[in-house]
Image 1 (cartoon, one colour):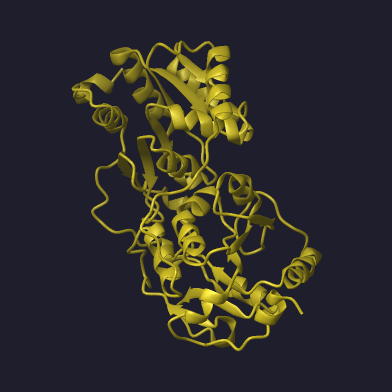
Image 2: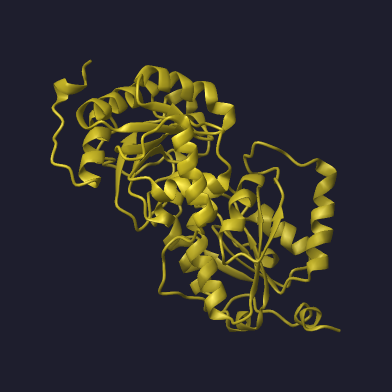
Length: 382
């Protein structure tokens, strides 16, 4: 019997300091969410790898999460699966769930860690691990999970998220002895990706010797989308006052929305929506002087790459602000008809200031780039 099989038959502790986890070399990281969630978990992945030499991390994640995972050096293997309790663009068939469980059994994981945001229920994921006979499981939970989690951390964030997502997940793995002093987000960018990004800009007609920035106006949920008209007003002001060229990015499915913004801005605006591979897009963000975006995955890419970011932040999850990077956060309320029915997402800490506006975007860009302009209110009435 190999060592992993032996480990799968070792007795486990229900609670405790997690000392037995130091023997776990083959670990499943259960994070079936979007790109940004994966990126904000990378410091926890680093802690898991650093604490046990030779430890292998397999990430079970959504199709979107699986796209970014190859660029995260701490991840050794990926299992993509769109689970029915997570909002994703695609969906597996019902009869594929038993196939997933069989695969998890075959992998003979020593342990699994359930990473979830404060508003999510970890128990469906924990049940998958239980049925797959993974002997050790770690996760936050509000209620007693009994046999579903061998290492249960009572979730202290009951009504509203009170910590950044990075801190939440680092605290979780610390409970089983995994720590790190390097809390930066992790993302790899290649020289080829940087080169291809600049080549795409040049082909689009952008002058690389003149100032430019990236505006990522798209987002996976409409409730987190800031108004196109205000993006247009801010971009026109930046173009007029400082000559900024505006590089517009988004997914192919949002091309028409981005094209509407490009037409509203007018000259010196370039629509690259859907034209860049993810690797090339990472190369673009790595070289952008500043990124303007909704609260979405590229914000966390920018944070990992050290690119200053202005984020238009819908008042939903408060714990996803840019991490360890120069930034400005401008808040806006979600329209009533789009607000989540999840009551844990209906509480947002106040004051949520400053509030988002075209004027605020322009001033935030000036602040981050060290420019001295101040923006009078009247300047944005054109």
